[in-house]
Length: 392
Image (cartoon, rainbow, N blue to C red; front, side, top):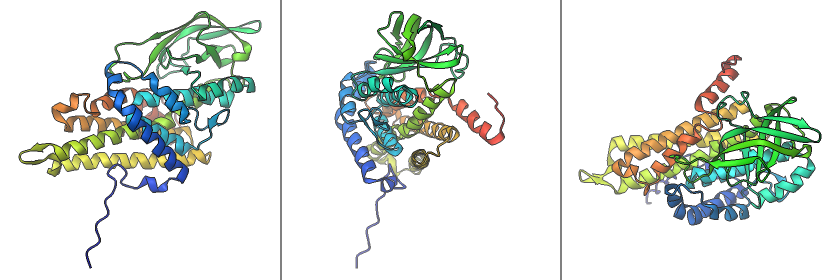
């Protein structure tokens, strides 16, 4: 009897995470993967090189139901948290800029409207945002604030039945694309969220140029000069930093899944390159040191996948905490950026060419590891959980 052929593991999924997914989750993963392969990968290198967001992808993203995918009703798909994570993972396998676009629209714009908005706000905006008839952005970070959102200088003052907003926001994804901005401002009631249409008098967005990261993404500075909006545009169901921080928790969850896609793309490139690159009369992949490096990359991806999967399960069960999200964002971003750098180095001189994906993912991940809370911020969140002491 012939010996049974040894089963070949998927090098990008050593623990067979795929087998843990439901039929619906597999369908979502596959449909987004096909979209990335057919629509994103053929154009994303040129978009990155030209410092331009590929707007032609927006309609396809909307048609797949990827915008506000976890929201029930209002024209949204009503998918679970695992599905949203898989969406982010596949999109970031294409490029962090595209995943950022979807993250902002879904987690930072649609989520606060759905969770904290009035029924009138939900009815007006959520269907339009789901279909990409409207694009949104999230205005929290300020030039002097960075990791300290409590140091907010943007203010909103009541004037009869209106609010007058003054201030500025920085590093705002989708800013120059947006029809609607969720602006967080200090009021006499504490921090409040406001829905500001970007064609409002006194509102301007200025695109940030000369980025060497997230080049296939629109990043902007926002300026508010006596912008007048009606009281009906204030998010009624939340006050204080709880509002914006809860939105960041949603976005960080998606990032923890998304960066796995970037890491997988880099490992796939490194595997292909080392199997086909001949040095000293043998493929690079035949060297012990190279196999050790590739194995370490696969180990990191496996750990990140397991963390993301359990985090998604807890989110679907209503048990996820911000500290657990911080662990995942911290661990998975660190793993992804280290893998991208390692893959870049493995490719040698070819690694600095955008013809190969590691350099693009490596540069993008420099932003991803910073935004939605730096690595240090997440370390201190976990440290506070462990010790009970706030060291910020």
